[in-house]
Length: 113
Image 1 (cartoon, rainbow, N blue to C red):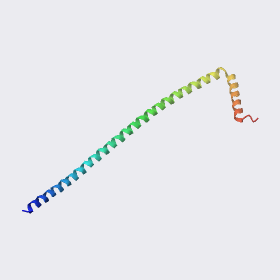
Image 2 (cartoon, rainbow, N blue to C red):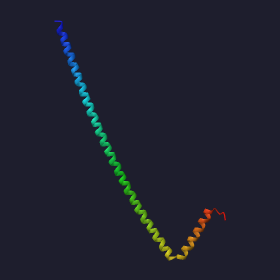
Image 3 (cartoon, rainbow, N blue to C red):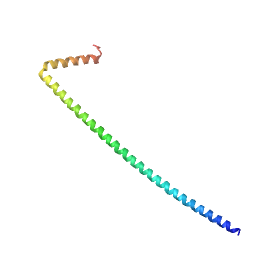
């Protein structure tokens, strides 16, 4: 009769070992699932960040193009106005250009002469 309790103990010990092995396998499966879900979230986050950066870049490029067009139109308008002014007052324009050039030359020369 002394062997019956030992047999029960061995069976219980084997059952506990089997439960621990199953638990170890379940934990491995759970960790794998958590890892895969994390990787999926990282991929989704990277995709979202890439899309946001592309949208911001496209918006910035559109703003830059609009600014360029506006500056180009303003520049063309000013050139046309200057051409008209020179056409209406050619002698005054030549004298003014000479005077401005003379002053700039003296400023660059530093008044050495």
